[in-house]
Image (cartoon, rainbow, N blue to C red; front, side, top):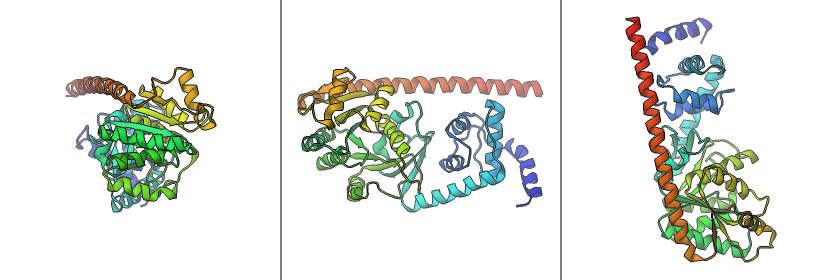
Length: 358
């Protein structure tokens, strides 16, 4: 495309925008194109999605026009050139194609299928990539997590606890890592329950590779693999930490089976507290063991909302998770009411402007 064509297309776009339907929900592929465009970050896309006068882009020039409108409204937004946006647009098309070929659903935060619990956290993923049963993400979930190097007691406890919650109808969420995560998934499957694995990379691979068979079993038993990372994204250390917020965000409670003081599980604990979920910690018989010292610390520092000592405590856990669910539903209603009020004010402002210009 030469410069004249670019200018001609851009010049006509503003005129065309007048006739585009306002308030359109931006499709996941367009959000994906923004994510894949250099120098366009989470906050910019979040602002774009909040605009009431969105229209569905049909190409890179439309995305630029949307970004320009966002800059007019919010300021301090970088608007890339056509080449950069075209790179993002083309990459999104390729990811979308690959995802469809491999039965990966891409769900936007504006979609009705997006998990309601997850939408309530401070920085929810704008897109979720899901292989398997998308409905599992909107069921009542509990995250069961712990160290990659558990004791034999910890493995058995994770499997048993997972089975207990699965039998009560809860979806078991974990991270498909070696150790406690894998045991939690297995426990749910043994009880013919549903389990969801949250991954820190694109769904074109499974990490660790030794858990490929387990991942397939999750899918075959009505579960799901989920990630905020698109097809082809490789894992890195930071992604595992970010993944932990999704494990707790999907869930009503986080159950710590075994962890050291500096274990990765502590990231999930932190997110659990920030997101106001219930933190359940297993009182471990081997409290002096390095891989259970985190349990002892969480209990002694009174960070645990529930100290789980025997199977009878499951009723208390379920009762508290029901309370959290009610609170989240109330928050969702308030948020939706607030959005409607803002939209009404914006619509009224537009009508007043139209009347003034008439």
